[in-house]
Length: 217
Image 1: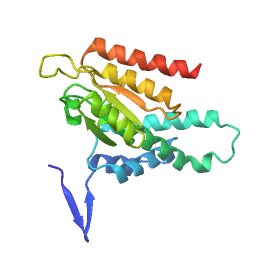
Image 2 (image 1 turned 135 degrees about the vertical axis):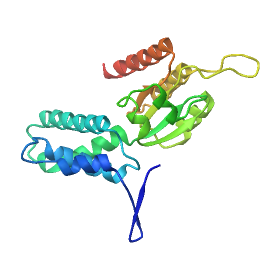
Image 3 (image 1 turned 180 degrees about the vertical axis):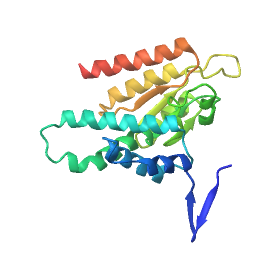
Image 4 (image 1 turned 90 degrees about the vertical axis):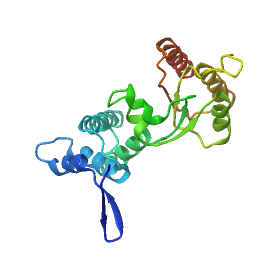
């Protein structure tokens, strides 16, 4: 059970691993100290439970790599460096705490820990996910809700009462591609696949990658 510390009417969640990493930050010995500090402070504000050391290190390295790539893309902009904290924060929020739509007929988000490693599961631990159980629910959410920044699909979505196979995650993805094409949407979600059907997963990934290539050419 997670321990909660009550202090003067405020509820503070204990995150000992994260607090230890923050305490160990040393500007003199860590070249990317500022990025790491920004990442840890943001996580401290948003997390409701401690992650693992592996997960914290992955997020930190990911943010550092993004910042270095950003600097290279904007080498001539003198205003970039003072905005480092904001730029890194926006990346972390978009990458790990974005809203998501999770399509699966049976599983919940917590079930992902049964077969995903510490890094792969990160998107499912963080952010706000809406869970839907069918192609129809999926399409309704896309049409009626605010744009989702992440979508995770299962491939096989079960059968109806007569034993007929229901529309799959692949069908949902094809519908999503047509929806974005028809609406000329420039804001495309990050599409993930959590299916344990290896062929189905490969088909989903291949179809989405081809769509992305087609709009970038």
